[in-house]
Amino acid sequence: QANVTGRSMKLEGRVAVVTGAGQRVGRALAVALGREKMSVAVHYHSSSEGAQETSRLISEAGGHARIFQADLAAADGPRALIAEIVEAFGPLHVLVNSAAEMKRLPFRDVTVEQWDATMSLNLRSPFFIAQAAAAAMKDGGVIINIADLAAFETWPAYLPHSISKIGIVKMTEG
Image (cartoon, rainbow, N blue to C red; front, side):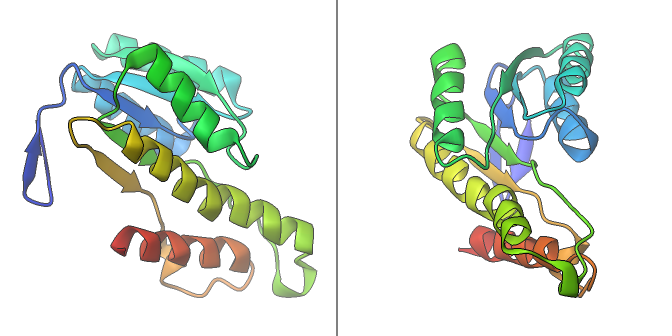
C-alpha cells in the first residue's frame, strides 16, 4: 500500500507503467512496484536486454511484468504505447515517467536537432503519455514524473536536459 499526498492506494493487483524501465532509475522503480505485487508494463526504446532483465527481476520479486517497446519521442509514440498497454492489462493505476536522455551538450555546441530531440523525449513525451494515461485511469491513479537536480541547478554542459527537467517540475506542479 502506498501513501501519496495523503491518499492511500492499494498496489497489489494494480497496473503500473514505467517508461525507461530497462535501466537505471526506471528499472529500480519498476522492480519496486513489482515487489508490491503489481502488474508492471516495462517500457523501453532501445535497451531490449535491460527491459528483459527488469522483467525477470519483477517476476522474481512477485510481480507480473510485460515488456513494451516504443519510441516516445515520436509524435504518436506516447498514445500508441498507452493504448497497447491498456489493451494488454486494462485500466491503469500508476504511471512513472522515467524515460529521458542526458547528453553532454555544451551551450556553444547545441544544435536545433539536439535541442528538439531532448525536448521531445524529456518534456513533450511525458506530457502526452501522462495525458493518455490519465484517460485510462478509471479508478483514479497516480502519475509520477521524474526530474533531477539539473532542474534546480545550472549545468552549462547539459542545458537542454536542465531546461527539460525544470519543465517537468512545472508540469507536475500544474
